[in-house]
Length: 216
Image (cartoon, rainbow, N blue to C red; front, side, top):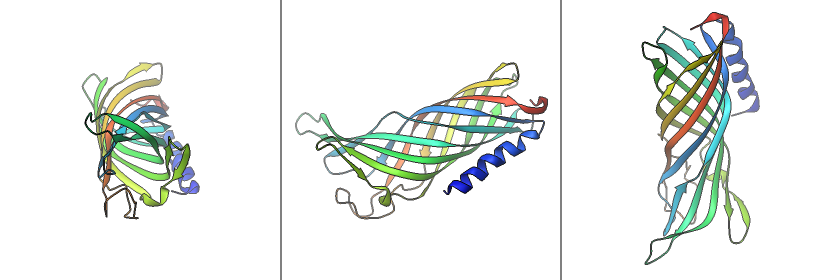
């Protein structure tokens, strides 16, 4: 995703905020997304703590249904470990990091009190950089060429909204399941031919959104 396209998307989110039912704000989150599928022989990949931040917007179609759109910077972290024989214990050998620009598009469905809500949608990530920090020897390996540029996933979540004046404060717990293979088929010596890796896991998000024009 080019920097110009990202700027245009951010500008577009801000431009629609003149609507009476639009909310515009910021979001931050922590996440533990694992990589499921093929892994190196006698090794395993476990989810580490990742994070992200960005801007968010929402448009109320009805008092109970809100369409949402966001854009942000996303970091996923995982640990690669050797599985030791006999004990099956893990010995960490490296840390994997994948950074992306994320564009979640979804819907919130509120209850009658417009506090609790259910959320669902898709998350499109444009991958920026993939690296492995090897513990011994202490080296950094860039493996971005082995990853696809665009990844799609779906998410389900629930949250709670409370107001502080015209600002809506919203914590949300979300489960996300990747739909597409992260790897593009480039040969990797530690993986079988045409390996498949998909991302899945949980995130805890916090939104602070301002209601423009006296919207819902």
